[in-house]
Length: 365
Ligand code: PMV
Image (cartoon, rainbow, N blue to C red; front, side, top):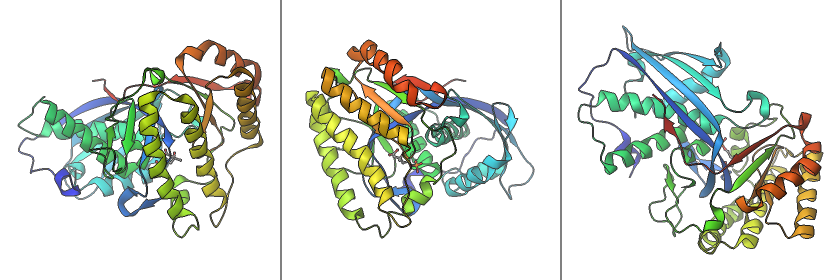
């Protein structure tokens, strides 16, 4: 597939108005995406667990307008008009216009809400951009005369939804379909692409079934450094090339770990990826630190607990101070007890979110 394959044939049907609602999950990367080329092409492949609880639900109402000369839309978050969201969506519309040529023909009312608190420091760009892309895809599907529910048509729908989501936020390409999603070309993963995410195609051991993710909210403030700025700092970064190679190597290792269920090696790769992501931030110019003292307290407590109990608990981080605590389902009770007894004290106002691996986006109506 190339970009051109996502440019549609002229629409032969007309629609006056309507609406679609999708809910789309957040995801947590195990191999991190950090660094991109033009047009949101990742510098290295990444893989993530899809989350189940953390999601965005978006309704897009569309109504035909008189002229086709500009984009027209309003955005509401939890019922409140959000004009400060408009520039990001306008940029997104500009990027995807050639793939969805109906965008200027309608006025859109975009109503969105998150299952997690907006000010939790949890990035909503993956779930938010993918939910919006899916609503737009449903409109396109309705504008297309020949509709099919064949597997091929369904695959194309998901691929294009992921392709469009990527143009909104790279990690959003991994939020469409599947519990484990790969984005970025890797030579051992057939079908993997820089253009969209694909369901991880190889064997996955029982150990990873219903894998748990408890998100410890260490800092609920706005991010000090946007991920766009962070990605750009990988240009001319002294360790960039080696880092991109390492991501390919780690992906190869994960393929065999997913197959055998070797959790000890899984832990090593996942924690190393998290610390490498933050090392890249600390060694860029300008440099920055997104971890907080309590992030390190939590990491140390997790390492202590692992030595003491032989648990398979581990942590990962996204571009912020919050900690994702990952563990197998069979340890759910014991690890939750540890979290409540020892880790919650490091969370802002004691807040955390219990989540687990989920299966992707859903059409609500
Ligand atoms: O999707 P973006 O551009 O916000 O980048 C997200 C990057 C990380 O969350 C730090 C890593 C990843 O692969 O999700």
